[in-house]
Length: 172
Image (cartoon, rainbow, N blue to C red; front, side):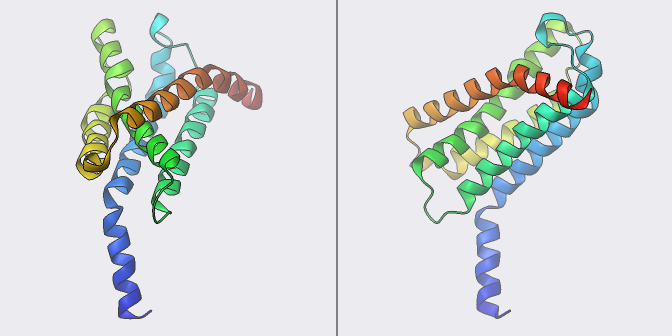
């Protein structure tokens, strides 16, 4: 590999480093949830449906894959399509909000740790806010960011129960 090609590769990695860091944070958050949330859900009452590890893992895998898809679609285009751009940034914002609602709210209301709280607050929230506002804030159109956030949030929230159900059918 020539020095010029290597330099171009290093510049590209550096340019997308924070998006990759967010993806790692998001993945660690999902691993924390996979390990502890199914057991926690047995006593969560109305704050989370009771789920078994395999059905929850299936739903979590789908959401994680969507996050990876949006990230790589965003990063792998010279000038991302506005729809991909705002869906990606909306997804990142959704994961930032996820640290507060449901994790922080559930922990306060239930007076016990909610799985995903620490990784949400300490990893996803700061990394995500930096990606959206630190890296892309000067180019943002807030109405489009709000639309991307709304689409990602609505699709995710309304797909979780069907994904749990499908995971139950696939793995039971």
